[in-house]
Amino acid sequence: MPISLIPIRDALDIRPGRLFIDGQWRDWDGERFDQIHPSTNEVMTSLAEAGVRGVDLAVAAARRAFDEGPWPRMRAQDRKRMLQPIVERIYAAEEEIARLQTLDNGIPFSFSRNSRVSPKAAADIFDHFFGWIDKINGETYPLFSDASNTQYMTFREPVGVVAAILPYNGPVMTFAMKVAPALACGCTVVVKPSEYTNLAVLKLAEIIAESDLPPGVFNVVTGGSAAGAALSSHAGIDKVTFTGSPVVGEKITMASASSMKRLSLELGGKSAAIVFPDASSVATAATRLMGLCSTFLSGQVCSTPTRAIVHRSVMDEFLHHAAEQVKTVRFGDPFDPATTSAPIISKRQKDKILGYIDTGRREGAELMFGGATPGGDLANGNWIDPVLFANVRNDMTIAREEIFGPVLSVIPFDAEEEAIRLANESDYGLAGCVYTGNVNRAFRVARAIRSGSIGVNGYASIPNAPMGGIKRSGVGREGGWPTIEAFTELKTISFNLDG
Ligand code: NAD
Image (cartoon, rainbow, N blue to C red; front, side):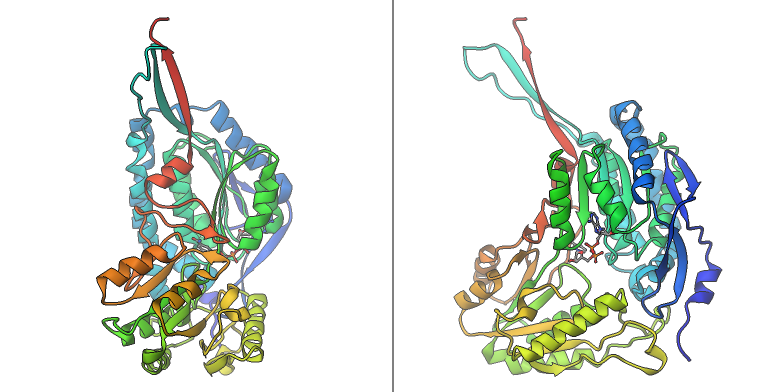
């Protein structure tokens, strides 16, 4: 029987169709849109399309709260005491938020509950950033010369009203990575989740709404690209923090230019994993890399190394283990513990990925397996059997463009310099990985790769270390102190000591 998620949806307390503005939930009297589940293409719920009017209301509230309210001027300890309970409330609602996230984007519940995109991971992110609140300090400078007796010092002040625009693939985690530092730094914020994934974010908003924050400090609007565009171009916004595609990143850059908004852009990737013959286990490298493309979010993760640059001498071994890994993949009901992989977020994105697979074949890459769309009980969902292309050339479309789906492109190499060159010949520079047992080579190659971060023998991001991209992968870093810098403005005060 085809899967249905309607019974699970009906068992949860979902109250969508509302916007959270100026400290109040507002039933929306404007347009609405449907959120569709990618495993089944059933309508999960109908949501408020905030459009320009909803965005105006939310930005006005956030602006008032910033310009006139107590929030940006509050003592660090008071702000921390007000925010800290959010962490425990998220932990307490872990299970429900994880269920909603699975109802949002089809990530298997086991991953929604226990992974770096889980509510627990989000609570840890809030905890990390709330820990900074009483440590956001400036500097004092030594008196420079006899010419002046003036003391210089800097202060970190909140950047202002923040627009946080989220993608669909990790709604809970990306919400935390943006809202936690914004609130910690004393900013006010308007959040817009992806039109595909609203339920978990609205639950997180309910949790924050319980916090007695001054009205207007935290606001949520739902909607599609029109609401996103209205938000990122709004004169009342001081900073946009965005995670999403490079195409939309470009639009936001353009829309924000006239008012010189501060921008943090976490965009796409085409990261490379280089597998050397001296890796401690080529099997592990192959299993992990294929696993990242075939399980969890099925390759719909920005940092996934979707180009495996593999030494020719271990190519057969690599391909063998990648093929073994893919046998463990199970599609199905995302709440079934046996399900390993997420569907593709929309029919449109599924068709786009199938188009890339055709292009890969046409351009001469060797399709080793995958690319079929399962029928039977799965026919209603957006599933694609994970794909491995061998003998890919770096100039092929599938090696250059972000596919954002279950496709691994394997590129052979012979010499270390060649592998580095191939890795760097990309419009992107988000993450990457080096598999080697040779420490000198590990550092040499990790330093030579042009990307915001790189892992040796594996890769994962954590909240207290910076992550972000160069080139078309974005602007700025998320994680730890660099995030605090990105949500504050530096003010220099000079104090004439003779005055
Ligand atoms: P997307 O760019 O299609 O949408 C992201 C958000 O932008 C949505 O909320 C959408 O409504 C909004 N939006 C659409 N048009 C807009 C406009 N003109 N102005 C302002 N906002 C607008 O991205 P997606 O499909 O949700 O996410 C996938 C992309 O996100 C991939 O490219 C992936 O690599 C990237 N991503 C990057 C990171 C990272 O940390 N670097 C993390 C996750 C995802």
